[in-house]
Image (cartoon, rainbow, N blue to C red):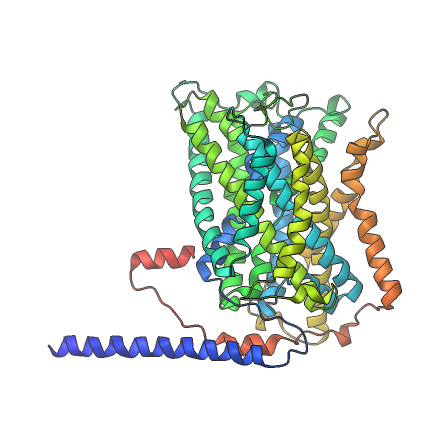
Length: 554
């Protein structure tokens, strides 16, 4: 009896301590909202839990770029070129995410990147990065809606495109009108489905290439031999193979676009100094397993000449734009499963679009708080920036372009424009990080004192800047070949570059901004608020083996 009473007292004491922690957290939040916020760090609620953030890091950006868009890469460049392009781009993403993650763990603010750019580089860069970042993410919504309609075409149906587009689009808008925790729960559920699916597909592709499907056909490296590991583009021989390899970097970039959105959510994350670094470390495994390994295995199972691949050179018939993963399963003679996987790909496309919608609103909100966007965009209620939701909804109406056009063509235009914008944003983030890095050194602040210290810096940031700029500048090279110049070959690859330059120079000229000196760099404003909240989140420890596994995942 004494043991039972002692256990009950200990349990009551633990509950009281937890309640006290929660009360302290709520009091701290109330105090921060009541204060006059001179630096405009915002009042969005920190309601994204660790499991929400970890699943955003693992699966948030996994969508049609991987499941469907990879078919464009395979059909154009061939299997070896596809794997190499995805691997090289993966390393670039690794560099960008770790650079941004170090800054965000130090100062987790809504929107993150544009605020850092204004503080550490130039207000003009903060202005143009905020708008470019918002546009890049916002256009991801019509991309994923368009891709969802394309995926539905796998099944013969008579549903008008306008109806499908409206259903997918309105669902995104509605979810983002609810408090952020609803978004977090939705992405947690979809993320679990996506991760389970991609792991299952990796195993299935491995079994398929070994001949374990009903067809019993052992594939091995057959499609790497015939039609060959590297396709030709525009020219023959080694030059043609190189041109094809270089051309697909932009589509590989689109597939990885939004990988840093977990950092964008840092302004609404509980205990960000713990959860953001933890999520950043997960990025490597997502890149290595969910992208590079999956692409490698699917190139073993599908020929680059298969006419069903998305935008497979001349193919534009309904149903032709199938996922290479679905094609591999069909070729293996597996019944029913292709439709199930296609349905999961459909949910993944919608989920990725939902993540882009959320991230775009938070970037625009951060720009408005930093006075780089109209003040009315700071309007929020119940922790939701509704004015920004309205702005993103307006640009997302571009999804209706696919109603009177081939979905594959619209997908190409949007994905190409989005990818170039992504490269510009990533290079700007790494330039900002380099200023942050040298600002710390100038002010004699050890990086060991930061909540998270990214590895191999500043070399990762330098690599990412060079890689992004080279790909952005030369990805539209085919427009300059004889007979190849057209709106489709020239506008998507290059329209973002003059827009970015004009916005930057225009803001700098009108506002007379100056580059931030290392001696004047603001490394601290807003940090005190985060420091005050840091000790208010309860420390939860695993009680058994299963909980230890769950804590490692989430």
